[in-house]
Structures are given as structure tokens and as C-alpha cells.
Image 1 (cartoon, rainbow over the protein chains, first blue to last red):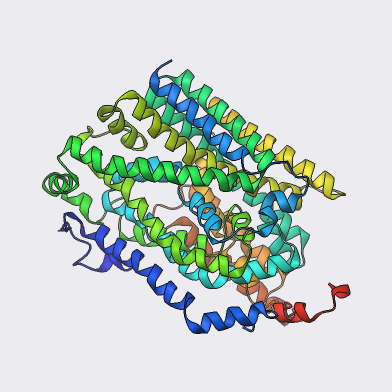
Image 2 (tube, one colour; image 1 turned 180 degrees about the vertical axis):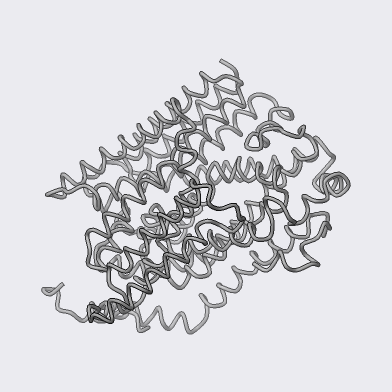
Length: 59
Length: 487
């Protein structure tokens, strides 16, 4: 969200042949999936799901 | 009939066939029709929700926005994945409560939490009114694609009518299951077509993607960064925030059937883990839009940029396949919109006495709403254009109501919420049509300020006169513990 205020990103420049704003945005969006996957497949989440399957979530 | 039109019409029929395959026998149960018996796993949910993301706006509009606004178009890339981060935590709460309380629509959820049918009615009316121009946009998008590909207005009108008569037919037959089966086809053809185009179009016109951006660097460097002007930093940031909040708080009524059709909270969460990767595909039409920047003359129609290049670079039959992909991005989201709108009309607007009459109203609404949008798309295509400006900003005004309804306790009663909502909507209308605002900050975000101020003032007044009871919403564990007879 801060993209527009980062001068090294929001400039008329190319990274790997693509606009810097595009590369920066794509990298951050791609980082969301592994970050959420870490939560989703953590032992804690597995335990919570097991408890829920056994009689409602304990939140 | 040209090869382009032949392929287009065959493709439209094929999309409808996929829709009919969604169900063997039609159902008379609105819950089954709307949510498919709440049995969809993460994979089906993924396609259903991806289906909502990739519309004709994505296919034609993103290329057009990159053509006219450069990298400012990238505001549209992160907002949905950002909303998914929040939905990973919030959507299971909505799913559980809706599952337990038998909600079918967004308005059901709100009217139940605030214990007010009036609030349900008002939010349903706003939902239908604001989604109608969005539905029309899908129809005109399909018509535009056919017109640009064939150069013939009659073919465009005929294609719109055939496509949307078929959409109505498969939606009536299959409900959300039809949306799911057409989504598989839509996403497959759309991704294949986009991958072909993103390689072939820059290669054909400029020598490749790298060469395209080096040319832009030399000729239009301003398009590579966000600067002052129409698409400035305020526009970029506020559009992204307003859109993220709108998706995060499920303000679009057609988001609800897809979410509530999940078979478990795990399916809901898994979906949000993997959907962000798919959102990257939004960058593909943008690259094609950038290519148009160095190929098409200044002043060319931005929404036609992608199809204009396709027309110049490919034979007629392949242009037809691209139009079929565009038609799929119109027909499938339109089917989802119809389910969202018709269920609001049947459940929250019309007063019905039995499940059977509710289902009949729902089916009638599918036909009526499509006929209205199709008629306007052909006869008065500009009539709803202005109303479309209100769609996102207007639905954003539901954020406080839905946000508070996600809490375990009712902190604010219905009247402050309703007053805030109505003030927010009035401010959106005034700022949009009253020539009262020339700033670049998103109107929906601006109107949220008086919306929340009125809500807080109302809540304070409610506390002062002692009208608020901070009722607790029953939680899953408590509901599970209740004897069956009490539910």
C-alpha cells in the first residue's frame, strides 16, 4: 500500500525489464500465499481444526 | 457469417452447456439453488471466487486502464489479495454464523444480527440497485467485444441477446452449481488466451515484453510511475484502500453465495491461502495495455485496446476464441451476480408466504433483472453508466454495519447503523452527481467519514437514553451445546 511513497519503487525505472511498480507489487502479492500457508498448515491450526471437528470451535 | 462470429456463437453456446451440466435435475429449494447444499470443497470455491475476480472489466478494462493510466492501473492488482488476508480470519466467522442461523444472503446476515427486517430490506434494495449497472456492464462488455471483433452492431446485439438468454436458462436450471461448472471453463480459456496474448502481442508489435517497456521508457516515461494528474498518489492509495475494505467486509452481495456454499471453514480458509497467486494473472492484460500504448494512436478507445491489437495481429478464428474468452468473463460473473440479486429480492425485498412462492419470486427475479439490464444495454447503454459510479462507493457504505455485525456482542443498535448508512449513501450521491467534489480521494472512503460519525453519535445518544442492550451473539460452542429442540 505504501508503493506510491517509496521513491526507489515509484519511479520511471525497469526491474528485470518490467516497471518497478509492477515487480514490487507482484512480489508482495506472491508473498501472501506462503505467509497464509504457514498459518494454515501450522500444528496450532491443525489442533484447532481437530477440536472443532470434535464439537465446535474453541476460539 | 464470418469465422470470428461463428466461433464466438459456438463458444457462447458451449459456455451455456457447461452451465447446464452443473445439475442433472432442477431443484425447488432456494438454499440448494443458491448455495449448492453448502457442499463445495476448496477447489470449487477457488473457481467460484476466482470467477468473481475476473470479469469483463479485468479482461478489457485492465488493459484499457494501463493504456490510459500506466502503472496506476496496478492499484487493482493487490487490493483483492490484501482483502483475502483479512478474509482468511473473518470469512470463517461469517460462514459459521450463516450456517447456524440459516442465512442465504448478506441482508439475512444483517437483519438477523440487528434484529431488523427493515435494515435487511434497505441493504437488499441498495444491493440490487448498485449491482444492476454492474450486471449491465458485463452485458455491454460482451457486446463491445463482438462489435470490435466483427465491426457489426447487429452481430453485437444478437450475441448479447443469445448469451444472456442462455445465462438465464442455465442459472434457472443449475443455480450456483452452474456458475461453478462454467467457472472451470472460463478460467481455463481465459488463462490460456491471456498467456498466448501476453507473449504474442508484444512479440508481434515491438519484439517482446522487454522491448515494449524499453520503448515506453523512451517515449512515455510518465506511464511508468504514479505522478500528479488524474491518477495521482491520492487516487491510487485511496482506490486501493476503498476496494480492499469493500471486498474484506463482503459488501458485494454476490460474494455471499460463493462463500456460503463452502462445506466447511477449512475450505473457506484454504481458498484464501491460494487465491492471491491467481490474482497475479491480472498483470497479464495490463502488459497488453502497455503494448497498446506504443502501438495505438493517442485518443484510441481505451476499453477496446486489447481487442484492437488482437484484431491486428491474429486471424479471424483466433479473434473469435479471444471473444469467447471475453464472453466467458461476462457470462460467468453475470450468472453469479444474478444469483446474488435474485436471492436478495426473494428473501429480503418481496414478502412471500411459503418457501415455494419464495423460490418462484427468485426465479422470476432472475428473468426480470436480466431482461431489464439487457434491454437497457441495447436501448439505452448510457443510462446506467453514471449509476455504475455509485456501485463501489455506495456498497462501501455497508462496511460499518457489516464490520460491527462480525463482533460477538451487539455494541450498537440498528438505528445508529441505519442512520450512518443512509447518510453515507446520500453523501456518495451528492459527491458523485452534485459537482461538489473535485478531489482524487475515493468518494466511498470520503463518505465513510460522515457515515461513521453519524453512527458514533447515534450510538452515544442510544447509550445516553439507555436504549442499548449489549446482547451477545450465541457462539458455535453454545449453539452446539443447545438441545436440538431449542434450535
